[in-house]
Length: 85
Image (cartoon, rainbow, N blue to C red; front, side, top):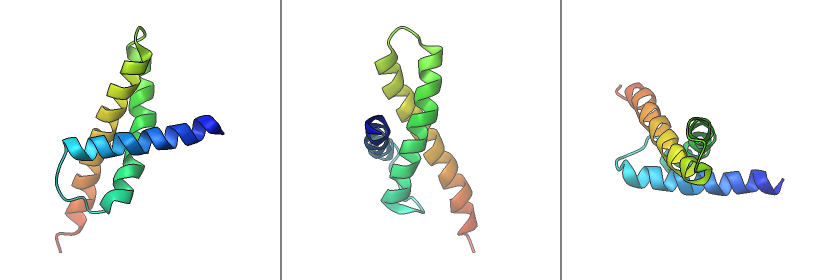
């Protein structure tokens, strides 16, 4: 249970960092950004740790931030298009 809460806090921090690195208006606000950070930390962190076996902690941080940025970018493309009307 503690590890799950740790991942949520870690994902929130990653989401904030991703938002800082990708400024602009998000259709969903800061809560969606944090949720995307959590999802990006799971996906990106896992993939980075699988690809880079030596320094797993750095790979986890870097992969998580990149994963969150990719999800944020995709989210902006998908949701941003729907609000054109």
